[in-house]
Image (cartoon, rainbow, N blue to C red; front, side, top):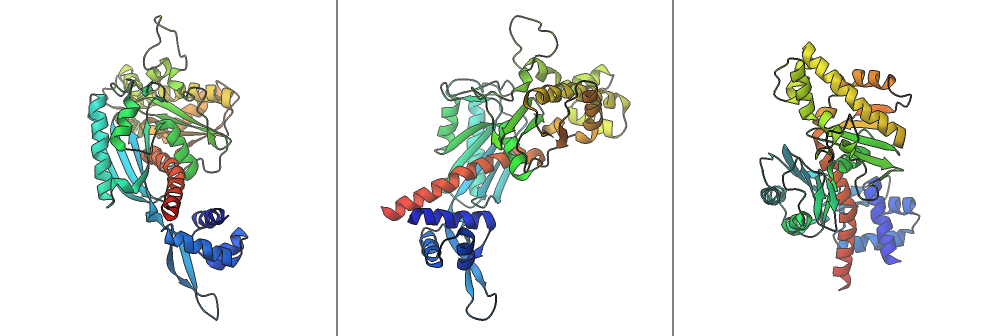
Amino acid sequence: MRELNQRAVLARLRSAGPATRPQVAKDTGLSKPTVGQALLDLERRHLVREVGRTSAGPGRSAVVYEENPAAGFVLGVDIGRERIRLAVADLSGATVSRVDERNRCRSARSLVQLVRDLAEQTVATAGISFGDVVSKVVGSPGVPDPETGALHHAPNLPGWGRKGLLEELATALGPGLVVENDANLAAVGELTAGAARGAQVFVCITVGTGIGMGIVVNGQLFRGAHGAAGEVGYLPYGRPEGEEPPERGMLETEVSGHSVVRKAHAFGLDAKSAKEVFELARRGDQSAQRAVAEEAKQLAFVVGAVAAVIDPELVVLGGGIGSNTDLLAEPLEQALRATTPLRPKIVAGELGETAVLSGAIAVGLGSAREVVFDRTLALKTS
C-alpha cells in the first residue's frame, strides 16, 4: 500500500506539475498524512524535490514539490542514411544535450562504432555519466527481428540486415536498449508532442531517402504480426520486372528523394538533390513544379491505399520530402479526388527532423520512470 501511495503521488506531480501536500491530497483522494509520508519517502529516494514555498493566505507557507527530473536520464538515437541525431533528456522530458552529425559510414561495423562514440559525446555534454542513463531508444529504418538479431528491410544502410546487429548495438550502448522502426517513433513523436495530439487512429508517412509509415490505432502503435506494418515501400506499384521483388520495394523506388531527382531530370532539370528540386519549385521553376506534382500523384496512391485499409482520421506527412506540404498538398489533394472517395485529413508534421528523436524520448521515458522507481525502491529496502 505504501508503494501504491508513492506511485499515486508521483503520478500526480508528473501529470499536473508542482504542487503542495494539500493540493496532492485533493487531486489523488489520499489523506494529507498519507501524502505527507509518501512525499517524505519519495524525497528520501531522490524522486521528488522541494522547489519553493507558497502561501495562499494567512498562516504558514506550504512546501511545493515536483518530480526530480535528474533522478534518471533517457538517450534517444535517430539513425538515418544521411544524418545521425542523438539527444539526452531528463525525466521531465526536457532535452539537456543534442548531437547531430552526418552519416558517412559505409559498413554496419563503422556505423555501430559511430553511434557509440556520439552517444558518449552526447552523454558527456549533458554533464552526466552513462550510468545515469536508464533507458536508451534507437530509431532506425527496418524491422527488428529478435530471433536473428537483424534489422530487415533497411537497404539504405549497408550491412544493416546482417544477423547479430541488434546484439552489437546493445553491446555498444549497454543495458536498457530498445530498437524501434524510425517511422513508428516519428508517429509516437507526433502523437505526444506534434500534429497528432489527441488522435486515436492516424498514420505518419515519412518520405525521405526511403518511405515508411507509423500506424497508431486506439492511441497505440500497431506493428503487425511480424513488426512490418507500415512498410509501405513494398506496396505493389506498376508491373514487376523479374521473379524477385526489388530490394527497395516497388513503391519506394517511385516515391523517395531519389525519385524526385529522377523526375526532375525527366523534365529537363539538372538538379542534384530533392532539396534543390523543391527550392526551385518554390521559386517558380516549371520543370521543378512538374516533378513535384508527379511526386504528389504517386504519394496520393499511398494515401488512398492506406485510407481504404485503415480509415485513419489523420495522415501526417513528414521526412525530408513529405515535409514540403506547401508544395505537395494541392496536387496531392487533386490526385486523391480523382482516385478515391476516401480522403482523410492530411497535415504536415509539426516536429520536422526531430520527430524520431521526440518519439524515442517519449518511449524511453515510459520505461525509465519505472526503472528509476523500482531501482530506488530496491536500494531503500536492501
